[in-house]
Length: 92
Image (cartoon, rainbow, N blue to C red; front, side):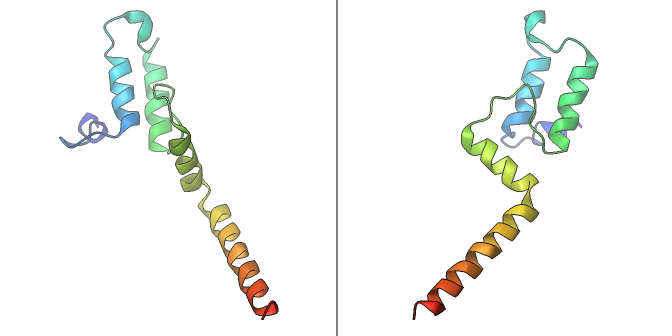
């Protein structure tokens, strides 16, 4: 599991790296209070939800929202394509 979280020797993704970094903080006040909080963050990461140990940029937040809401994004994109197509043919 740790090898998966750390990226298997490759450049690790930011959220799992943040989880491990927070868990290994030298100052106990900056670590997870208990193992349950650590487990919650790992589960959130595995479910593609935001983790508390990582500060997301606006672009990361938007990307995560798009991934979690693929159906809504796909329907919205199909609607926009349809509207542009209709507007193009009506305007001819």
